[in-house]
Length: 159
Length: 138
View 1 (cartoon, chains in turn cyan, orange):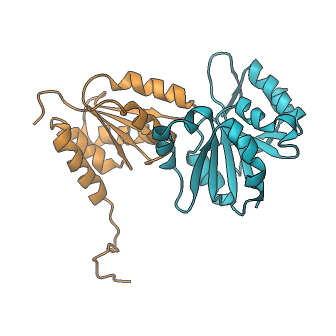
View 2: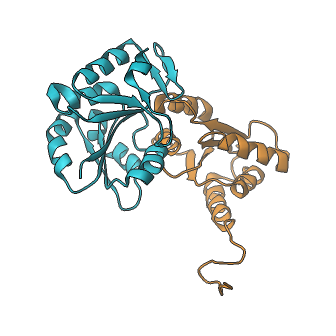
View 3: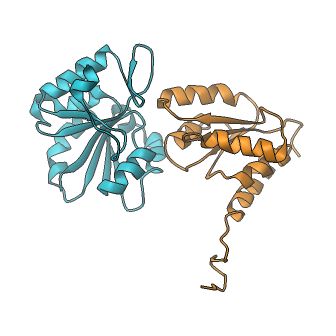
């Protein structure tokens, strides 16, 4: 089964992902790609509390996830890939590693230097550059917080 | 009894849930503002939520009530309590548990928390009674 969702969301495994997207996509595995979490068993345990019954979670460094992407695509398990920022998703996508895939922007929140694009999406100059790079890697980038919400194209996001 | 320090409560939830629960507690019990503080995760990054929670918690004994046992609210609460002994997280908050809290927050955490768990779990009921030991009428 292919990877059913690539999502950028600062909150990683949380209600919208587990209930909103999970209810529709029925993932077997949530793969969190994050260098810090991959090295912190204590934090992994916290995030595992949010994994629904019957599913599992894996925590991989960006380097490991890049190598594991093809096996994950070929796995019989339905997989959701989560990163907390665009930079990490781009690290996965470099050198055409995700060409033809779609990435969902689901939650990048307010902080200094970012401006509101959508209620759940705040982008700064660096984010915009990284999103353009992600698109140049052959990835289709759109924003949508929940499956039933309006999908917004990258062109619209970048204005 | 505690050593004179009354326990504070923070209700952490999605959307307007925390504010609604605290409003209901205030209207039912008449307790003063500040005993129960609502906090929503709406539109906040995990870091922002964590920072706001850190500011609210302070030094005294505190119970952090969260709506779900997992997700961004529960995660922030658990991280705040990682290295402290005077804060406790209770997930699955409901109105009966909060009402019991405001009238018994003079108790020590060791006395108060088991009481709140019992009250919260025990208040979830169906009519007719479909509980495990009930003689099901349907």
